[in-house]
Image (cartoon, rainbow, N blue to C red; front, side):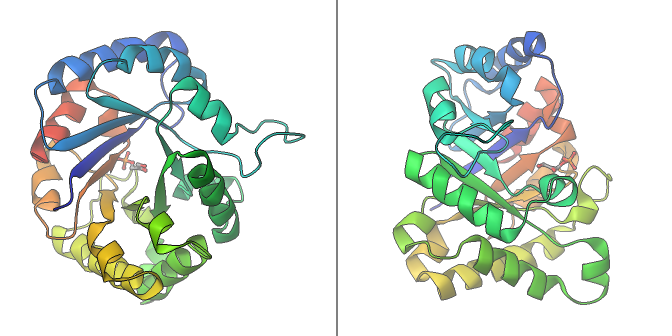
Length: 251
Ligand code: 13P
């Protein structure tokens, strides 16, 4: 059985001085939750305060990106070692906003993923097709390329440590959620691809989150699907009550 995992991707929201208050609110509301892993992913500048705020709770800390190099002349980048040193456990890699605005490719996703794994960070790797790709019938090919190139040269043991987030780009921040059936179809496809590049055991054990306008009203029917193991939440993760309600929908 896979343990569900609900993660809040705060994106570029919340000042360092605001992070602890949001985490305190979340902690209080989810403290009795069992059987769902809870993660918050604030901006880099919030991580130090966030690490102090999550200490001793059932909320884990994640970052939103990681450099592929260990150290050196990479102005503006943050290494896996720096994140580990702050107490960060998870890291989002390859979010569609990074692919769209910051030149992220399947190759750079793969390099970041290897750096995260080497440092012992738990990667949450995002994949997902754009609206025009879905409408052109290209969704399966797009997902296959992102999975095969993003996860290239990884052993089954490494692949087993990854969390995948299926985030259809057309559902992110649009209020338009994939139907449970649409999402389930892609999650099942991702599991078939994992069986191909690793083995059946990895395909069965890897957790695959859904992301894209997930909210308290639709979280349960999405997470009730056989291959949907949680959510990666944007907008609804910025308020403690809506985020906690989504977490509880996964119980
Ligand atoms: P929304 O929940 O705001 O649609 O964002 C989803 C997302 O991109 C999470 O990474």
